[in-house]
Image 1 (spheres, rainbow, N blue to C red):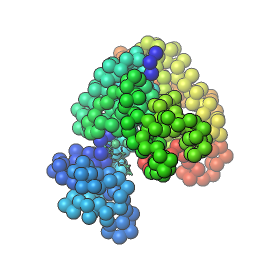
Image 2: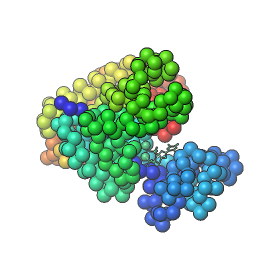
Image 3: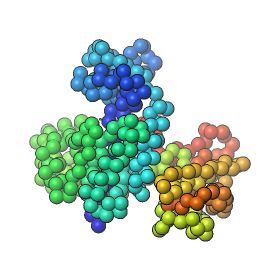
Image 4: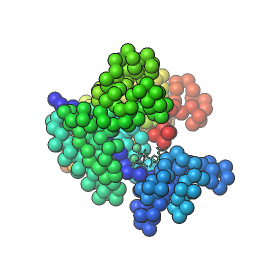
Length: 369
Ligand code: TTP
Ligand code: MG
Ligand code: MG
């Protein structure tokens, strides 16, 4: 089947959330800042709305520069808890429409839509339209969505039409879409790589695609050179894959058919617990909290958690707890569509003496830039 991937990215995310909370801020330059505490203007711009962008304000710019560019602007301190809350709601909406998703940052999520749209781009666009509608209705926020045959094209498509965009790039359109763009627009090409490409006489993505792999590897190293060779042609076979969130491991799966059969539910929960446990063991970890997630036929999501008296490291403890949580969950006449098992409060085996300090971080935080 034709692969179809979607990438959703929120428009001027932190600033848009602030505008939502206070509509008076709309239409005028609004700059969300991360203050360093060094002096009144120490720190950098987190993001800003379009009115501020027109004045040249950008993410990462020192706040003092932004003050000069947008004298009349409103400067707010970033309130991460607020953005995290909106982010979670948005991610939840996307996850209800796709089996496999991968949150890539606080305002960005990939969804594998191949199965959901039977490989048809038109159907994928309808799903995307629905997601945009739900986010607007429930969260009062706009986003931009790109759809393509892989993650690279989906992301570049989303970037190409902002704000409030929906951009579909079909396989036969990839060449035209990509090749006229400046080399620096290729995902993964930062300032340094772009300068080096330019110094080699390469200005556009098309010109990268004309080069031999050997030439690119020689100039940019094995990893970057190999990447440029494939990406300049729009090729990318990276799967959409849920990353482990910091300090937790989870697995989720669908039933072949929505079910209310206890035996069938127990069987899947046991299997999921086993998959989670494999990761726990690989990492040499022990867990203290177990969570069972149920997604019902109406797409409502429910979670039940239990914190154990002490850290555990056995499959038995995990399966037993997950099964008890699943058993105690009342379906109330509904059927279950998907089930998930998660462990959290992780620590390395044998590091039990400390308190929270032994907590394990399994992934770069979504707020790290
Ligand atoms: P982005 O999606 O890169 O930017 P954005 O959503 O503000 O704007 P766009 O419409 O172009 O997508 O980043 C998401 C949020 O992450 C952003 O709202 C604020 C935060 N952020 C920083 O704090 N510092 C940074 O340097 C960047 C790039 C983002
Ligand atoms: Mg964004
Ligand atoms: Mg983003």
